[in-house]
Amino acid sequence: MTAILSEETKLRDEIAAVGKSLFDRALTFGSTGNISARLSNGDLLMTPTNASLGNLDPARLSRFTAEGVHVDGDKPTKEAFLHQCMYCQQKLSGAVVHLHSTYAVAVSILEDVDPDDVLPPLTAYYVMRVGSLPLVPYYPPGDTALANAVAEKAKNSHAVLLANHGPVVAGKTLRDAQYATEELEETAKLHLLLEGRRTRPLTPQQRNALLKTF
Image (cartoon, rainbow, N blue to C red; front, side):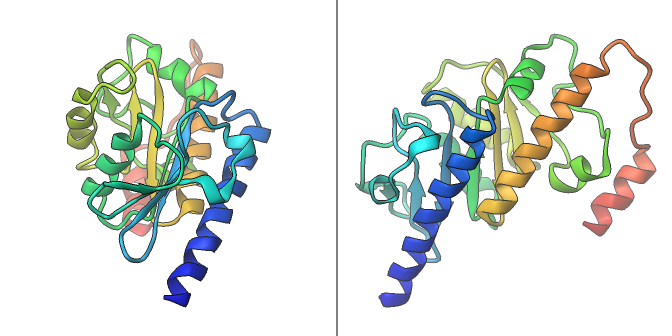
């Protein structure tokens, strides 16, 4: 019991630290975005509704059982189901980060993207940390129909992009999810900066070699 409590305290503090880091660097703003992480017993800790990631109180994080029942902490975000969908499909994931980061949202609004893989493989680290990025069709925030759409896309990718909304990224650890989300945002920025210019993305062979190795 003591070990579980120690693990939970550490994870609560880590969620608050990651949230502040994302907020301080303008990767999230206001009360947008949410973070969750999974304890070794399967329970989830998640940032609550109407909370700024820049000023989280670790003691007030929402807590869910492994079955998805809210049992403790502040009222959970209405987007809790996005996280639960990712955990259901990505069984080895220990954390999920969902942001409304500017460049990723901008890409999610573009009309001419590939819905199976929105961003081209511009850099090795994008391929290593994100891999592929399917686009989930638009649904209003909190719409439970979004759950089925996310679950379908997350079968084969640990990162998805919600149309006109933002990215949802799972990782083995909270830091993995954070770094993958940041890599996604930087690649979205590069993609927009290079729009209209001839580019030289990684070849399919180069991309596949990275995926096999990492």
